[in-house]
Length: 417
Image 1 (cartoon, rainbow, N blue to C red):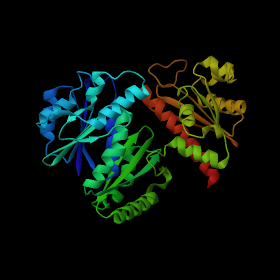
Image 2: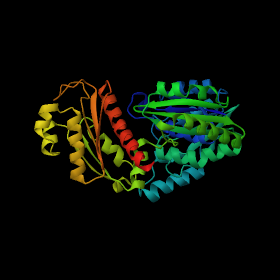
Image 3: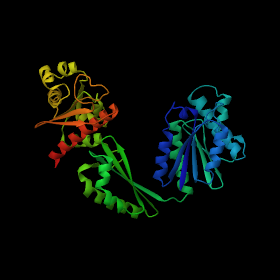
Image 4: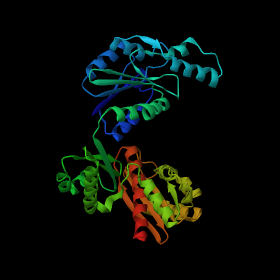
């Protein structure tokens, strides 16, 4: 079963807003075994909309459209639906009652004609009642394709998808099962991971597909199994994950789409009752931002000193000016001093420090652009490592951030194991 998601709105095409609706809809469809065939963004133009509908007719089973259902003149989706389905707009009494109660009862103001017009829907459509707003959803079928129109407001769209569309698709369509499993790896690039698991990948069953999803410092491996026997699919996924673990156990940190390195590290710190602090220069507080983004982080993350300028390293962290003069501000020695000092200042078990040249200019140091020193102060001493993450600047910062957390994770695991 295939679906196409269409977003209508010039504001999306000119980059004024980001389309998050399609992402949400695709995930919900995938959850019930409906494959999203494509996502399309089109303008608020009647002929463009009609041409898109005609192109999708009988090409996919379901077309879900968001946007263009507001009360103003530039919202033309309902009228365009009528043209495509040779229909006319009529007042839906239930929608009118809901809109009236919302405007007069909740907002405490007289209902306008524009508000009342929200109750106009094509006479042939199945109305999807929108309890979160004034624009109802519409479900209309032509030949082998169902066209579903939803408001573009995200919370209204989400309500209708979860409470109207998904239950209706489940009831009316027989769908295959789609089983996903995500394996989260850190520390090796996509090509190296691919080389290590090449034989394993070549021996996957035909109904299981592997996708590589790389990000700076990490690669997610997503297994997808499709078929009619759910138990068979789940068993096959589990068996292949176990055989994969035997090959790359050293770089696997989790088995969940949302199991990020900061969550993995947070769980380890909480489990071992250990605390962490950071002293950041080139990463500018990004390590602290990731650590503190995890719910419950206050139990293990004590704080950070973002000592971006050299004088901040000296005056706030207490790094010796003589040390900086001798070894340079971008050096293993300065990184180690930063980590040890912030660990002492904030009284933590571990401390991460970064100093480097993210670029595009060298700043106060002579080290090659892309060079980063990462130090980890532990209960037993301090570890320092040197990296060159290349360019551009954003890549250096992202990779240094992830690598810092990876070093911390591996060090804690030495104790756990």
